[in-house]
Image (tube, rainbow, N blue to C red; front, side, top):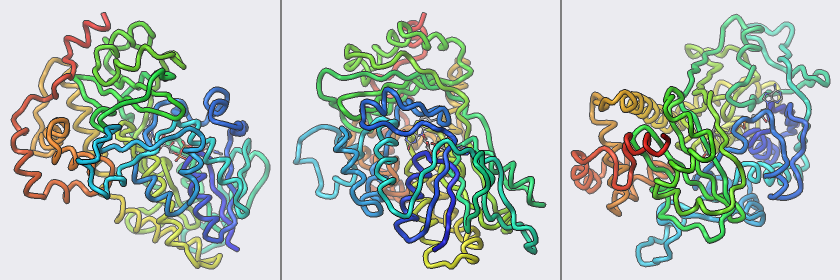
Length: 466
Ligand SMILES: Cc1cc2nc3c(=O)[nH]c(=O)nc-3n(C[C@H](O)[C@H](O)[C@H](O)COP(=O)(O)OP(=O)(O)OC[C@H]3O[C@@H](n4cnc5c(N)ncnc54)[C@H](O)[C@@H]3O)c2cc1C
């Protein structure tokens, strides 16, 4: 039975391990954090320390696409999340119960809403029930073992750890955005891996609340809203909770005061999507988080592998703008690609499969990743201009179209469906935007104001924090 070692027991390490173990591989997952998940949602949230994951208590949205894939690949997991207080929120229709406007297939847009520590705790307990999979916490990987005399590129055949060496037919890097694996590959291979890395330039200021009334929303258009120099996430969680994140440019000195609860609240109260929840019981103070890098890595350079026997999944392979909420879903899709390309392989061939994995990920996920990166670049420049008191004037029609779609989605049912379909990866943006009816409707919003009704202007934001 092929033996696979996974570096990192975050969500994507665990999901990849589960999917590979179900396909007959013997999987060992190693995580440097020693703390085990607790017994239930409340204690995972309150007491599980995960120093290795700085966004552990930041609000997360787990996309419908993730639910669709996991219901097929890991039956029972979404049920376990719901048993622990998660619930289904339809991102197209929100909590509205008007059955008349729903199409039968609209259930597809159901996301499972759950706080990240609860998500990871349930996931961790779930996968440990699987026979072919072992999770070892408190084991830090410190380097790669390369086959001593393989011709051509070095072959990775295991890892060095704080608890000794472990051999493997395939090593999977699920060590997150800050993975050290590229340095280790650089130390054993004559060809350096390709790594693109830059500071995403945003800072999250988040708080969680325990709600005293049911969460109500119109779906994705309420969960993520844009304001002049500010993005706001209002993400419900399990067991009657909600996380609110005010996301600003890390360079925006005038908004740094929102790290204080009082100033944060003064601003959040002016945001229509956030205000209704702020009289609930706060579960946290403001939790700032900066240093959110964008990362893309490849162990294939100019069509040639830098090493064999090694692949990366999740944030260790690609990490984009977190406000789009795609990380966990993209990582899960990569796990499925990996399972498919190594299915039925014998041990020696497993190491060559890394090449096919890289090619297939490129083909299947490139458009989604490019969409996220393009959105991010435009929004970053736009916010920079707005801080300077200027107006962003991009070349081309790409960004104006995105803006028109985002604003139109709040008012027009056809654009709402188009916007949610694109944002949730239900359909690719080119397919959505090429529909004639969408183009015709969108044209009405192309010349409208930059921000939709209810959005805050810069002056209002500065007044709230002064
Ligand atoms: C502020 C913020 C908000 C986000 N919001 C969303 C969202 O709404 N929706 C969404 O889908 N995604 C979101 N993301 C992205 C999401 O958090 C990541 O995509 C996800 O955590 C990736 O999981 P992972 O398992 O690849 O990596 P990680 O979660 O980073 O886990 C990596 C694991 O590897 C371990 N590790 C690292 N190095 C070693 C080593 N040498 N030895 C042993 N173990 C090691 C770490 O301890 C850690 O447990 C957000 C990210 C941020 C920063």
